[in-house]
Length: 520
Image (cartoon, rainbow, N blue to C red):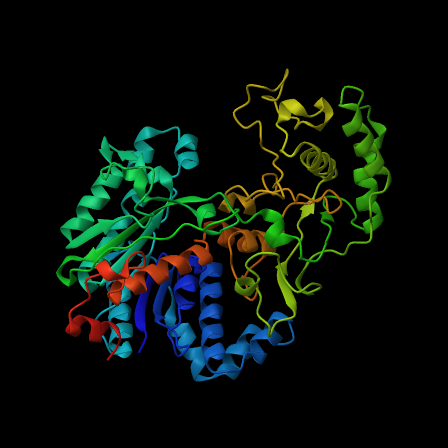
């Protein structure tokens, strides 16, 4: 039997997806999600659908799932056709809010207990991370009322996670959050120290998952808990705090991840194979010709101050803007075999579709900006700041004046450079695409949902429910599944008594605990 997973504050299931990919020598799943708790409607629906996909895949027949992705059947028809598997998936994905009320918490705990009883073992692994808005540096910068900030209940949602730790005593837990947690304070109290103290008090030793040879030597330095995803083959410069908790009585030996060798995985490595699409033209009639004409308006402006070679390149490109690319859609036909890197991770041989490859709409003024910004990035190898672009392309905001060199958000338009990992994909991508401009000028748009999901390392058959805005938000809030898979491999090695870094030094579990964790 696989090891049961409890997933709290699950989002769309990035951590869960990584754990679900670990297989034993027979090809069976090592971990199984018995319950995922998420409050947001569309993330919950995504979790529910993925829970069904795993069951259909293990049952050897995913045809109806792919019919749903092609919009040939409805969601209800898919779950009805799946029968017991559909009912099991819906029981696993629980839409509920931890910390809303004592009665809600009791109901959630009862369902977790019932799920573990059904799994046949009291031992489990707990994953997830409390919402990060109270800890994020950007969120804190935007809050002007200190008293309101200190009273924000999100500061203490970790206690809901802690209550589950105390009640169900997982053998291991993995807690994830933003790096801002390390510096966050509430009424003078350092939140990271408070959280760690409470977790240790529950009977756990806390460990980073970073390699032991990390440049941060001081074991008391909280920065050792920060994981940089691009060091582990994630094509994104994403930093997150991961706390690995080991139950004290099991005397488990901690282990750490192994950094990838070789060059970092880049934006182009994982996006270049995807079908080329154009954006919609918003706030006016959209057509390929109108879209092209909107960008071509750049040609009427003078660029005398620009580097001569760049000016010639820009004007030449304006003259040959293509207009044959289609709009993105929920499902488009795959055109190429797969990306240059991580192809086996992303591509399902049973699926010939690219899903959630939606293109959003852009105003005429933003289309011109995107075209210029991406041309600049292609020529100079970096995304320009507002001070490096012509005045007529700068936003018409009161605080954008003069040479624009002192603006706090001078990079509010940002191209994702093809030869480097992307910048951090965050939930703000749901509001606009200004920070996520595609590197190829001819496409002249922000990233599609699927492209953002690729940078987050979601497999291509992972479907996000809801409107495009909801899908973007889910992707931005997730843990990269490919990083989660490496952490899951680490957890499995710890539980089975084999250190991922040094097997000969590992101390195995007692036979009683090992048998329980293996479901024997």
